[in-house]
Amino acid sequence: MRKILMKAAIAVLAIGLLAPACKKQVKDSPESEIPQSVIDRVAELGFATGGIVKEGNGYIVEGDIYLSPEQLSQGVPTTKELVIANEEHYRTTNIVTGTPRTITVSLSSGAPSYFSTALNTAISRYNALGLTLTFSRVSSGGNINVVTFYQVSNTLGSSGFPSGGNPYPTIQMNTYWYSSSTNTNYLASIIAHEMGHCIGFRHTDYMNRAYSCGGSAYNEGTAGVGAIWINGTPTGASANSWMLACSNGSDRPFTSADITALTTLY
Ligand SMILES: [Zn+2]
Image 1: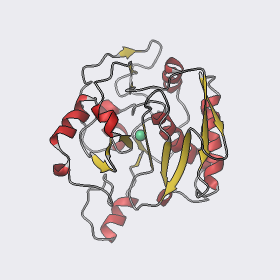
Image 2: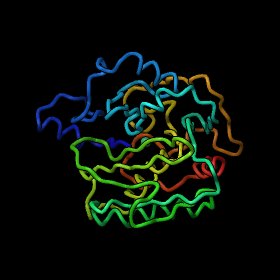
Image 3: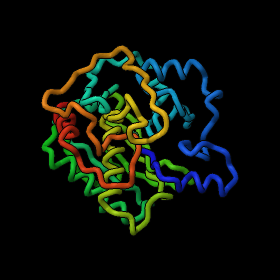
């Protein structure tokens, strides 16, 4: 998830780099260095192709979603695509299987202590919905482990999608943006967002990321996979979804449309 405030951009100017405001400053490689075959594959999988970043052996797309080499080499997904309203769009390339199921979540011992309360809040928000996925906090070695890092960039956190029916195992949170005075519910919203990716949720405003991130609108299409509209959800853009691509710095508990999407999948 990304921040849309200007703190990172100012920091970039201060250290004399020329990266655009909406990019990571440290690890970005010019898009010209991303192989065309990767760009084509990302588009084929239905993700936005702007701002792809090399990360380890894989790539980060849409600001905070890690795609592994395996995910990039898999066939085009046939799983359900969920669409809610014009600016909302939930799509899963992979989901967690074997439900009902408990997913354990841990916080790295190196993380600042204020993350603990926020993580518990995020977990309780999910568990309050009575999903077939139950999240359970453990002291270490969880199915999902939350780790922290420090990077001067507008990345608030990142994670990835499930594979093999299991949740993505790591959430990375950038402590550049947080302190002990950070609003707990706001921090919980970011963690809940990354947990959403870990269990297969896309950005709700994938069809128009400018909706939450600003800048120019783009629409990368639906990659030819099926779409399911959910009855009873808003027909207009629904603000404040927990899976909007960019944060405005506010608390984002689940909206009614979010809850519909969550209870439909799980
Ligand atoms: Zn995200």
